[in-house]
Image (cartoon, rainbow, N blue to C red; front, side, top):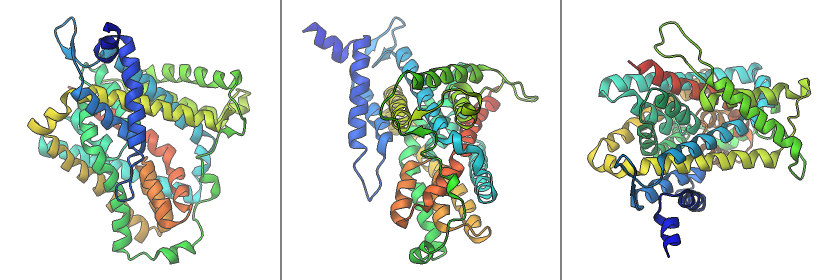
Length: 409
């Protein structure tokens, strides 16, 4: 029965191929469970990965270091999953990316940008107040605003500086659960503060055009995937990795800035979705293919982040500053959303339903969008979400990376 032992506990490729799908399957299944009407969805894969890693059998490598699984292989799967995810997101939002910058779309994107930048400012201030190192704070920030691609970009940047990217993954996992709850809570709190009447809001017309809804953009009604669909996927990924690897030197910045494995494919996919057909490049990819690419990518990424962070997660909670990280995450979540949310509704007169979607989109948080649509009984939140999502995603990836690079000595 040695083959079974190697499959369950061995340091083999078969062991990894067995465990990663197991983590994903359990995580997706458990993520469907709703608590007070809110579910973590795909992100529950992260917590299953942490649990499996913590309680799993370990092996000792050639450096006499204990690991549950081969970290180098997990690093590869993690980065490849991230590339698939952000590339699929880029293909989805690309066709409508530039059309959102009209009257309504410009205002919403400026407000969403303010949320992003204020979150970065709060993170920096907490870094100086608490003395917690910046990589850990970036991990807390990424979890607090539920932005996985930003986490991936920051981990990649920190690894290039010879740091341990698992530190960010652990901090991310600490702050993520209350990040999901906090985003939804901010939406509810704004409604309470201004005594918003849902029935009255339902009679208002959207302030953003339907052109802003980009969730279905770039997809065709084809019933199957054939070879031409594979060309833009893999050529685009190739070009994205090349673009993400190009260093950009900025005066005063100690390290060159790169789009990285998250930003490069995202930018290329957006450009392909927006302009590919004009240059006769085959970009018609089925909606089902793009969605499958996105979900497989995020599941692979989250599973590996959990498996890599699980070895130190419980120790951080029990003996470390895990609870402090959770508290800081709550501050990072609520402060920007409440400040900008109040200004958006009171000063800029943004429709409350649109505002719900804008808040969810500014944190790239699907559970918050799901709650908003259900609570409003309207598709208006989807307009706000899709209008700000592309720019927000790009800013989240870049700012997370810049915080890591600028903090390097």
